[in-house]
Amino acid sequence: MIELHFSFIIPVYNRPDEIQELLESLSELEDTFEVIIVEDGSENTCEQIVKSYEDQLNIVYFFKNNTGPGDSRNYGMSKAKGNYFIILDSDVIVPKGYLTAVREALHFKFLDCYGGSDRALDSFSSTQKAIDYAMTSILTTGGIRGTVQSRVSRSYEPRSFNMGISKSAFLESKGFGKIHPGEDPDLSIRLKALGFKVGYISGAHVYHKRRTDLSKFSKQINKFGLVRPILLHRYPDSSKLTFWFPSFYTLGLVIGFLFLLVQLHFVLYFYALYFFLVFIDSLINYKSLKIAFLSVAATNIQFISYGLGFILSYYKIHILKKNPEKTFPNLFFNT
Image (cartoon, rainbow, N blue to C red; front, side, top):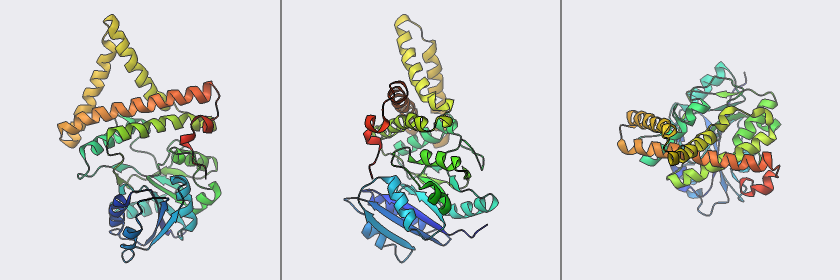
């Protein structure tokens, strides 16, 4: 196996405060690596913050026009000196043992592309913890996507908030496409088709802030739902029944309320039981009634927002046969 030289690739867009926390966490890692910061046309730049870490990190700063996170990551990887790239979102914090876990895992079983999980820090807000619960719990989409993945999986799709990719895989695949969000599963699917090994590293977790309020979370998740049918249109073989679960959940909830008109309650009883399980599980995890209630809300927002987006996009793309880029132009960056 070749010796690994890591380059962290971090696109930034108007988030200087977040990048400071991330760089502070990287400065505490016990390893040698390069950090590439790509400012994606920000008005509120992080250049001065990056300069303040030049004595602590091997760090390089680039400013470019706004072309989206996928293209910015490609730009950063094209400038990097390492042979293995670690892609992070600017709103994550990296634990001290991160690179040790990555090196050990890749030495045991080399992966051309890996993904890791995310967690919430105690310092995160109650809403951020609730959103983290909705995204990672075994009772929510964390259970659908799988919280414990095999080292090499044909179905696992690393996410770009915490993803590693070898230089050779980047060069052959040409990196991320112009769709956003969805650029990370798009890349994962293409890498697998090219024969590269894609998998999960259980110890390579980061602390991910995600959205700071439920409204922003809903808009983000709705876009995830819109994107998936577009990816299914591109890659029919990637279809899985689990992609439909949020839509089934949403339709079932609507049916439950309609049944109330004829005095039938049994459908909503199942939902009430599910809400109770989510509430108790979150309460056990966080020891907070507020976070438990917010977790129920965040879970419903996640399923409904994704489900509605998926149904709308599937209808337009797969039933009406409309052009994805013309139908949903806000999901594509023209670079």
